[in-house]
Amino acid sequence: MSWRSQQEHYILNSKPVIGITTRPRNDRGTFEVSAKYIDSVRRAGGVPVLLPPGEADPAAVLAGLDGLVFSGGGDIDPREYAGDDHPEIYGMDAERDAFELALARTVMGEGRTPTLGICRGMQVLTVAANGKMHPHLPDVVGESVLHYRSDSGTSHRVSIAPDSKLAGVMKELEPLVPSWHHQAAPAAPVGWRAVAHAPDGVVEAIEHAQHPWLIGVQWHPELAPEDPAHQALFAELVANAQQFKLRKANSK
Image (tube, rainbow, N blue to C red):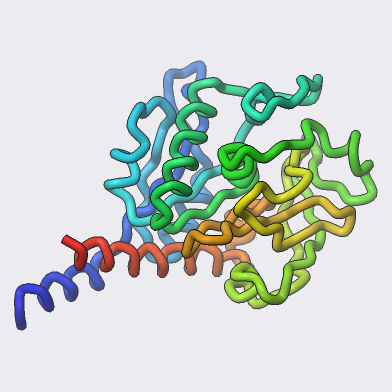
C-alpha cells in the first residue's frame, strides 16, 4: 500500500471532528451546551469538540475542524442587525455574538466547512449574512402557530421545498419539528434560499446558494433523537465532514 493510500485509509477510518458552539460563561464560571447536541453528533459518527466564545481568530478555530454546529441559546443583540430592542429579548451576550458572527462569516468566506445552524444558530448565519430579524414573532404573525412556550418547547409542521438539499436529507416534506424560539428572519438573506416555512409563513430553514453544505434550521433536531428525519441532519453533516476531511488531506 502506498503512502497516499495509507493516509486515505487512516482518514476514512478515523472520525471527523465537529465543533459545537456553547452558551456564554455563566455565574459559575463555566461554559455549557446541551448534551443532546453532543449525543447527536456522536450518534452520527462524529467527534464533538466544544467551542466556547472568546476566541479571537475564527480561521484558526476552523482549521482544526471538519464540520461545525452553531447551537441554540439566547437572542442576538438587535444592534447587530440594526433592529429595535424588545422587552421579550433575553440572554444576550456580546462575547458570544462577536465570536459566532465572526465564525459564521469565516465559514461563508472560505466556502468549505460543512455547517449546520440550529435555532439561534440559523439566526447567527442570517445576521452574519447581513440579514434582519423579527425581534418577537407574536407581534408579527400572531400565535396561530405556537413557536415557543416559556416553560417548555412545542412542535408544529413545516413545509420543505421538494428541490432543496434539506428535503433530500430529511426525506420528508412536512415533518413535525421541535420548536423553541420567539424570533426568526423575515426572509433569507442575500446569497441564501428559504427552503422551509411554518404554516404562518415564518422562515424555518435556509440553505446557502454556493456553499456545498451550509444549512440553517429554526427548529431543534437534537430534541428528536428517535426521529430518523431529524437525526439525518447530523448524519449528513458528519458524512460531508468526513469527505471534507479527506479533501483537506489530499490537498496537502
